[in-house]
Length: 292
Image (cartoon, rainbow, N blue to C red; front, side, top):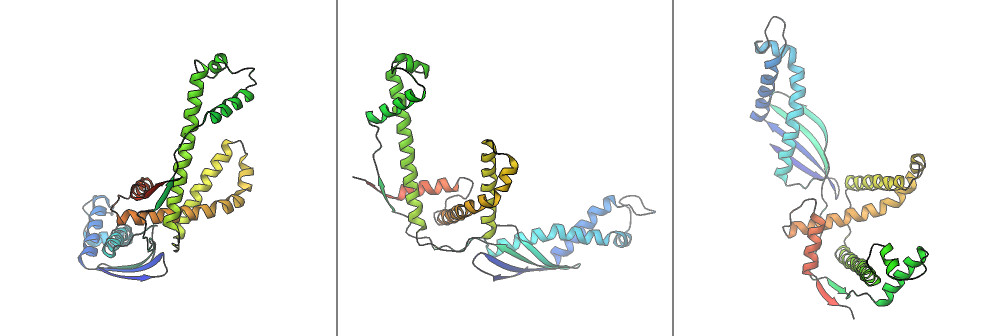
């Protein structure tokens, strides 16, 4: 196999691929053997037609099938040989095939080169999460007001599913604590993301951005439909929705690519849980400091 890689820009490259000899010849023989088993040639039982008759009746079909089977195999071999980190399906052109030669051109989107550094030891200012009695009281008063209750007592608590006012207060305190803890975690993670992305500029693969935009658009439409907005009204707003979604989609793709690059550097397995795994690694390696 011969391969020649030409970089088109930061996220695309063109690969010229050529295979000569046994691999092509063997594929032709394999496909002819498959077709021979069921070929219907006048005057012969299935599987008994001579090769010259098969050539006469099925040469075009065999040629087409060889392309369908051999091009993907050869393409994958070329990608592995050149160690290319391909993101999207390739655009295959200029396919040429005869009985012993195959050549074609593939344009692919690849992961951009990202100079990720200084991602360990990022400073994190964390706060101790606590809940004050006043916060609990305000929350209970808000519930009382919304329900138009006359007083805060055990009967009121039981109407909410708690045996007495003390247990209601404990439950409200837990809810507020969890909410504040989640907010603090989100603040810390956002700070980490800002720390690793600051100053990193690179071209985003358009195919990856387009896919993210479509996924977000689909989910936004579902959310709007669940809120009762008619389908025609949702479709009318599509351009406006896209304008709002696109910047966030680009940001998410950028973050994912950076996290992927860190995963490769740190030998973290690349799977559906990659963002969480890398975030856990970054949190473990961060410089934690209590905010005063």
